[in-house]
Image 1 (cartoon, rainbow, N blue to C red):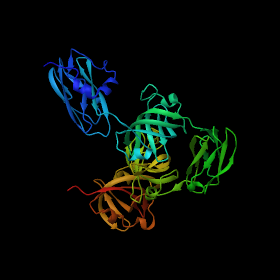
Image 2 (cartoon, rainbow, N blue to C red; image 1 turned 90 degrees about the vertical axis):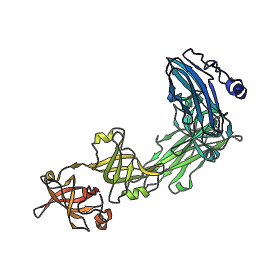
Image 3 (cartoon, rainbow, N blue to C red; image 1 turned 135 degrees about the vertical axis):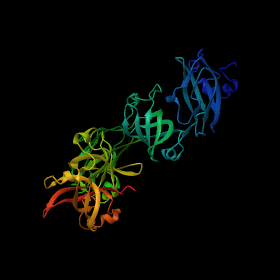
Image 4 (cartoon, rainbow, N blue to C red; image 1 turned 180 degrees about the vertical axis):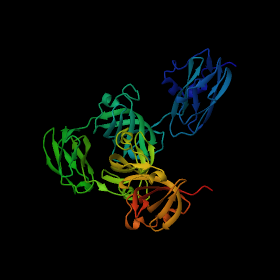
Length: 510
């Protein structure tokens, strides 16, 4: 078979694309592996294309280069002639992939092109509602910079906000390129960018954007006093220092913050200072995003700042925490560690008498969980914020306050321990008798001993009527296997496990 490296019809159809790629250096004429063409076109509506290869040795594609939208068959082969099929589903916009085939220590480059990219001018709202993979051009203000090395920041045009995940530098390079500094991007600048849309964990993003135009802001925040822009719960002031190249500064406080935050002073000039005042805070943590505006007659610039005020810590049970609003309020929960999901970061599930587990996304800094010696079954007190992930509630920024270490022990060993209401144990056994179903007084037995459980309650924190009828509610019966937490006490010469905190149960093996 005589192999060809160019197909005239393809070049005629995609000449613009090919001429822009400077592909004389990607077209490799190798003795070890030869291809019928190194440019592979696929229709934008989806389809497939094939090429023929002839190799002198075994060969394979570099899997890391293959995007999710492209299917290649086969991915590898041996010496001789092979037909390779490339297929892709319909796309909203043009896309391409640069592939490599390795053979006998040499590399053959293949470029797959599906359609031609078309840039659509759009608002943030149109990007948010539009399809993924499409390339958009958007103009908006920089509201926050998340990562300076990779160029991650937020763009807002008044119709919505999108996340810019990666900014190409002036040489078109992506990745860890310090593009924020290279372009001189600052909060408040109005920037026009273009890039493809994706959605990650519910966040709409434009990825590795090209900077088209930057209009420098007339306003810049130079700093805060105090530096973290936080007012203590007793009340006080925060100063925001600005540089203004416009005709004065106007300030807006959101309606929902006007009952606790006010402007107490604004100085004049090109370096104005705006002072905010808040009275004492009897509630939880709170914050407000204030807006600064200026204009020079032909251009308006807007920057924002977030003012925080520390509040009291609100003690809640697990159910109350799950039903709370997301925000900066700090909540205190005391509950049993029901399950440990990650020991490095301290991701755990907490459970109390409400029987509504709370997922904690990390306790303290990396490694702190292990240093504290926390484990499944321990009773822990944490303080953190109500957040969420993919719509599921979770505690974020959790800080450790205290814990009661719970020791796993056999019933026989439990019976030998001294009485103490401050030392907790976790026991597992079979229920052999129920003396009081209302409060869960029962006998728990294993192969070596039995113990009287004075109360099996739904979980930590149960009081009054909340302690009643847990056996019936949970479907716990005689002969079930029960794991319970409690302390040792002797009453009228009878050893008891008291303050019983339900942990888990299972039906007997059939």
